[in-house]
Amino acid sequence: MIDDEELEQRTYQLLNEAAHVYRSVPPAAALLRATLDRLADPLRLAVAGPPRSGKSTLVNALIGEELAPVEVPGEQPGTVAYRDATEPRAWWHDAEIPVVRTANGLRLTPDARHAGRPGGAHRAVIEWPSRVLRRTELIDTRLPLPQAVREADAILYVTPQLGEAELQTLQTTIDVRGQLASPVNVMVVLSRADATGGGRADALLAAKQAARRRRREPRTGALCQDLVAVSPLIAATARTLGADEFQVIAALAALPRAESEPHLLSTDRFTAAGALHPVDAQRRVRLLQRLGLGGIRLALTLTRTGCDTAAVLAERLQEHSGLKDLQSSIAGLFTARRAVLRARSALATLDHLLRTRRVPPAARLLADLELLVAEAHDLRELRLLAALRSGRVNLPREHAADARQLLGGSGTSVGERLGMSPDATADETWSAARAAAGRWQELAHGRTLPPAQRRAAEVVLRSCDLIAGRLDRLPA
Image 1 (cartoon, rainbow, N blue to C red):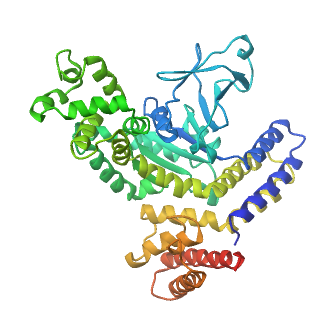
Image 2 (image 1 turned 180 degrees about the vertical axis):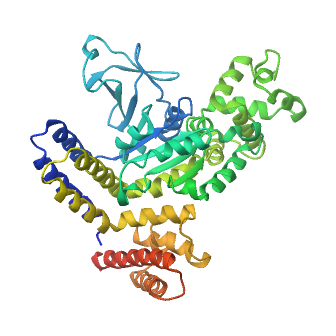
Image 3 (image 1 turned 30 degrees about the vertical axis):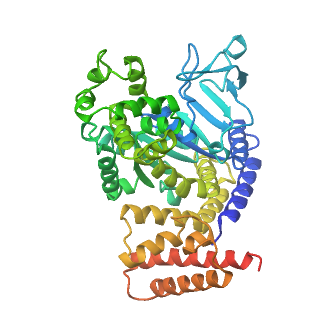
């Protein structure tokens, strides 16, 4: 049983061995060099999905800046990667390019130096100072989902609905065999949360409840780690809400309901020239573009019920939009596990290479890879967390929450796994660790649980052993 640090080290060693074996095969050698380089990079989180599903708007919401979409005259970027930097810069066809910020995103202005370059076509890289991007590189991609999965460590699949076609698309992400096949790196974002039930006042709440029901369905749970309902439009506007926009919302909220409500039934009524007299039509159109009609209704309700500043309203809009739920899931399932997910994607790349470009030592390398994956406890934890969320594995109610916490579902530090307060003493932490190990020792080796649940309990018990190992390594 190995932890995430040893998994990273052994993945690096295995990739180096493969690079030596494939040194005379240029395409394979280049792929392995790129894979080795990426092991030290931030987590690559791709935002994928069908056209007009809200991907670029969600990227803006996550970064907290209006950067997307990126426009290139005469061309359409297939992929735009957003990375942290000390100052704004942009790259197109692997060459630096001037970038201008517009009202609708960023505009790159290529010249003859950027034309006709092979290899990096249709890929832009945006470097932007951002705390969010320090540990996570966001990739806004138009690539088909299977291709996006191969180029990222984790995926946000953004879709307005989750029907049969979308489930089939998710099924195509499972393109490797064995224990790497579990989609622990995929999260689904339902992006029309504010339009549920025709955009009524409780649309976002209804969408979140529907998402929770879908998350528990076995088929959905088998294809993703989590499913979250979000309104990217409301979320992005909340992150960038200005004082002038708040003044417009406050002026509309101050109107008597009997006067304002009829104009909130359709976009035509809301933007009509003679409507809602305190706010001119131009500013109402801009507000509609920023929030949508459902978002305007929500903002007016929140303003009338106590959100008396732009900061307070922005905070509440983020909560209602589903953005905070999404950020929490990304932090717990992806960012906290970035070392494991980076190693997993590197091993998946190597697995595919070893199976498709066979050379004499490939069989030995493949056996070493399978052994490494089998010994990687962090991957077992991710698979069991996904199985518990989806209902594919059911533990008794009194043990299920304890299992999720010890597996790192609420945070991967020792204190978070044990549910300790930040000011807990070493003795209290050790006592909690011993108690947890005792509970799960009895469940894993006793006769009270059926075989499938005992196997799950054994994984939790191994997590308890790793907690004890980490406590042993801590300074007194």
